[in-house]
Structure formats: C-alpha cells, structure tokens
Length: 131
Image 1 (cartoon, rainbow, N blue to C red):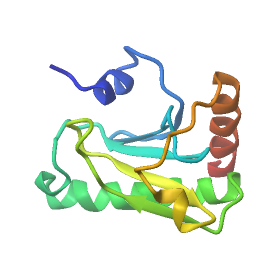
Image 2 (image 1 turned 135 degrees about the vertical axis):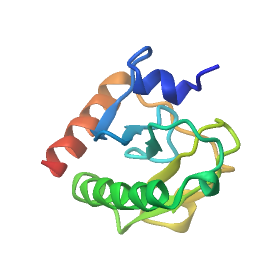
Image 3 (image 1 turned 90 degrees about the vertical axis):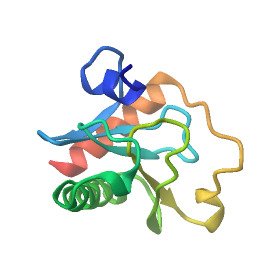
Image 4 (image 1 turned 180 degrees about the vertical axis):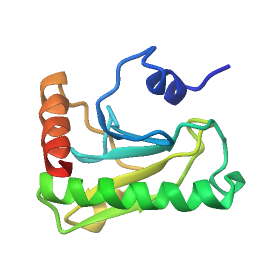
C-alpha cells in the first residue's frame, strides 16, 4: 500500500511542494514545529534511510542541502536543523526545520496548525528563494 508521501509524489493528494527533481521531492509539513518545516523525500519508497543505496542516500543529502539553502533565505532563522526520525510514515524522509532556538526542533512539543494561506505563502517564498 502506498504511503501518504507516495500519494503526494503521484499528486493523488495535495502537497505544498517546494522543490522536486526526478529522484527527490520536498514539501512543507502541514503540522510543522515551526513555519517552513519541510520534509525531503526520495521518490523511491524505502522505509529506512540506511536501507537506501549509497547513491540515493548521497543524492538525498545533496538535494536536502539545496532545499535548506532556500528555506534559510525564505524563513528568518539562525540555522536549518535536520532530523531523521522515520517512525510515523514508513517512507524515508528528512525533516528540515528553521531554528532560532534549540526548542524549535523539539518533536515532543505541540505542532502548529497553520492555515492553507500561511502554508501557501511559505511555499511561495521557498520556491522563489530556490530560483
């Protein structure tokens, strides 16, 4: 059964896509820790990040770096934090999180529930910053 990420990749459900190439996609987390929280995902559906072949793992990190650079330009922050947790969806994904404090990357705190308009505005700023 396809994961929710595969459904976004195939455009079966909507996603706030900020970057994409033939092997990877990046989209906003709709329940982010902070606005701009982005998920970077290989299009190949593999559950565990270290089960990816070396070329895909390296490519995922290089793609994530490009996305992080755009987020940094689009969202006021000191750094972009990176986390790989991977328990909630069985499809490899990297969290890129704009950070101003260590608390910004605390996954045990309550998530935000931004409006579609807020998500759309952040998506547009990240896409513009990556152009």
